[in-house]
Length: 477
Image 1 (cartoon, rainbow, N blue to C red):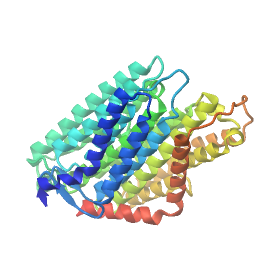
Image 2 (tube, rainbow, N blue to C red):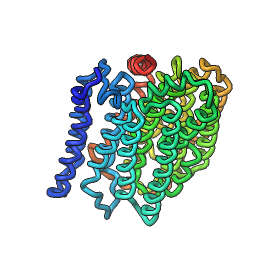
Image 3 (cartoon, rainbow, N blue to C red):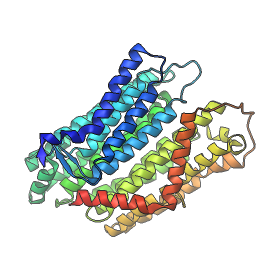
């Protein structure tokens, strides 16, 4: 069905919008009340509304949005990741800070944009949804700034983000010019029948990749993190590397499958080279860091490279592997940052050397951080290992065995560099006395749920892979 009556399928997004409006009003008239609780309630209601649409394919606004299995899988992951970020955010407040009461509302609006982007099946709606996400991320980066470099980091993020949006829009314009239709499926069919103008189509692929590179966490545009990750609180970075990255890869996944997979350009080779560079450069940058936060931020470059590996096998198992890997990556990033936020309340530092004797002071946080590090490195038996295993299998099936070898090398490199965090936390003697701090229920729930998710995915991959296969079959047919 392609009617305006299907607008009721937007009920999850309407709950998020309503929650944001209520949160803004609450922040204006009752600033001392808990706006985070209202935002969490809106996320729960959005999930319940989405649950009524499982196993349905709904076309909305004459093809502008498509609620299929792929979109539903991504939207469930987005809502879960946003809820965990909000739970952890309440603890990420330093002495003397007073975070804006309206901040949770911007988290809701950003999640609204991410969910619309996941279901967008037309170029204009896709771009507008991504901009709704991006604008609220810019606001969060500036609103929650910390320290002297916060303003510069927020402005830098805005400038680079605006440039990436312009490049993405140019790439979409080239696709429209070649395909003659703004709907991704129709444009893809036109491009599949196109024999000439292959350089222009290759240019479009490069422009779309460059435009989404900032949002997906790829090199070289992630060099801004050197100022960004120190000037913006971890709660905002945690949201960007989980919800923001999920939405960006969902968008590129739909564009790649519907537009480039049927074309006659060597799209897989271009993506494979970019993936190999991102994996290697990201891990080399990460292993040289002395801060846990910086290590996780630069590791996100390598993780984005692994996610790109799945795109070398778009016509078979690549999308299923991508969905599993993105879920594992979101849980891992949230677990790592939530643990950093929690332990920073004890030691007021995120330096790796200050993790010494963490297992004695806070054994629960030490276990959670160890699980996150193992998952980032891609070691068994946690979620990150199986996610990387699936994307590397997709590379082999797609005829890029050399890329799988590069990926395996990077797993070994990450293991050698990242596991030193576990050694410091478990083996090294304490550097100083750690004062006991009682952590809130929210941060403890975020750490526990994300850590449990990492373990559950590693031990019981079947249900998640079944859901991912359903999402893959929906977008491939």
